[in-house]
Length: 98
Image (cartoon, rainbow, N blue to C red; front, side, top):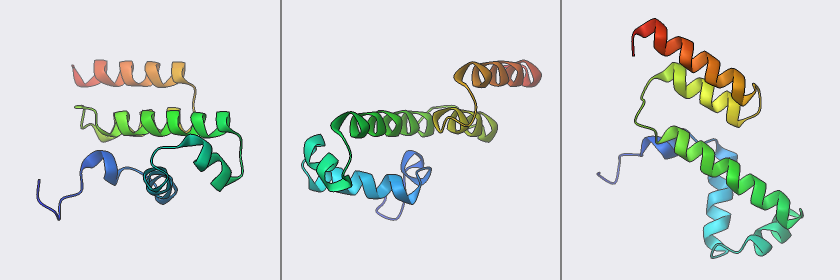
């Protein structure tokens, strides 16, 4: 990978997520320090980190189908339920013959 190439998992993140990652690295991964920085509780930061991990995994998936990526993003952002996302992805795969 060249220096000018942004990995897909990173390109799919929002500015707010990138800022969180930057702060996380600068805090040497200390969730307590991040919680203090954002003025929220440790469990809130832990939940945010877990959601960020899910986003990265979804963006890094081998499935490069934009529709599937969109459905996963909607589920991670809690705009649709996980069960609904699974149904939509399953039906989509049936339609395209995967």
